[in-house]
Image 1 (cartoon, rainbow, N blue to C red):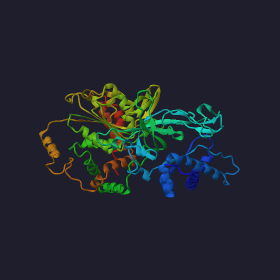
Image 2 (tube, helix red, strand yellow; image 1 turned 45 degrees about the vertical axis):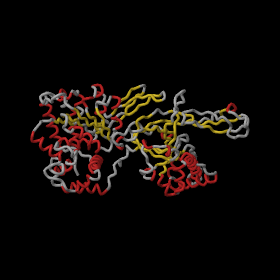
Image 3 (cartoon, rainbow, N blue to C red; image 1 turned 135 degrees about the vertical axis):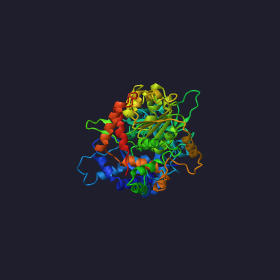
Image 4 (cartoon, rainbow, N blue to C red; image 1 turned 90 degrees about the vertical axis):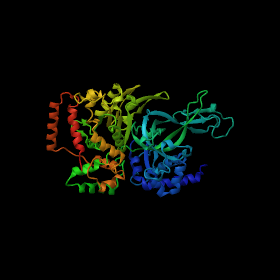
Length: 598
């Protein structure tokens, strides 16, 4: 596409300048009042607002972002000149800022619709050169570097001065062209160009890698990733494990030109705007009518709240018959407790950890998979295929530089991490998650990279006992798990296959469906409003609603009951001392604080 002429460019710059004066004059004034003229200042523009103000200009921005965005930055510079002529700014020493960047946010715009909002794995050549928005999780965050962004050269023969920028696609630094851009003389070659002293401009530079969410992929699909280039004010905005929405321009990056090696083109996204979605409270949209349904449901059970709780638990993992206690524990774990911070700043985690220990065929994996579906952010893995690096963080070398790549616990920050076949993990690998489960951080010291990453996640593990479960032995002996690791689980449930003929008949009838619809262990079927909510992701919404809107506190009566129970366990638990530590008291408090209802 051939860019328009200079006259059209001026009209588009003036049109966008009018848009900025109308919608972003307050932000422009705050930039003028800032004292530092060397900083890079962003102005976030909603694409939907620009589309409503000037549809043709918004379309040009979508189809020619690399050509239009520099013009929009120029419009921001012109707007500063206009505002500086206002009476309130005259006579004052306000400095004009020359590093103002227009950042395009596509939130709520047609660019985030399913038709124009591809996943990372569906990025194709047709998306190159347009304004593109991608969603993913940061799995790798590179170091912040200083890059030569601009250099002015002068031709010795014709004395023409021109600016040269680096080719980021090929990873090359600034180099003068082969011939003079003025084209005044055919004999002007690269050897006649000299750099102007003091004209070099450097900018901040960072490369990250984002990966599409595994929850959005089908079975058998491998999550794809793409490199993202961040410049200036966008650097150091995100870290490994963050969910982000990146708006930018798709391009192709040349691989290293080695001899006898095919030169490939890798997709790369030059970011214009980065928005963290993991910090947003509205990750799950709950309509007002759904909230009214929640309130109507609990008003129906105002006199008998435990029956309302049982009605909710009927829909938890309905393919598994009975096991009411396990379903209650799964629900409490997903909701989580309340984080406590004392006067000294010491934090006590609010997330609860659950471990299921049981014989094969008792439904442990079914509960794990169902819990992963209910969580708005989850990572599910197996112990046999997980190492300490895969669970925590990995140090990888890319282009001669060491980077940290997030593991399962970091990617599940703020959500749920399900680990099946927990007993298949090596002892060394299990020991690495001690800090992640209790302090909710991972301290890293690898390849000269020393940092701390957040792991504010709920761990849901499932393991088989070692041989036949012996009730006379301690839990550590039956599971071969160490005492410190067992003490970090707030709830540990043992599921045994007792081979009861009556129970086998009931379970087989439930599975085969010979008694009609599968039951969930309750004698009274539930036909009220909750069944309708279930059709609209009701459980996922309800758990998120309770987790965000309820902050329960312990009553004096509850404190006495918990204290008495803890003291009783300390006196009676002789062969299972690994579980009866102070952490058990904290687990009781966290679990009780999750048991709330409207």
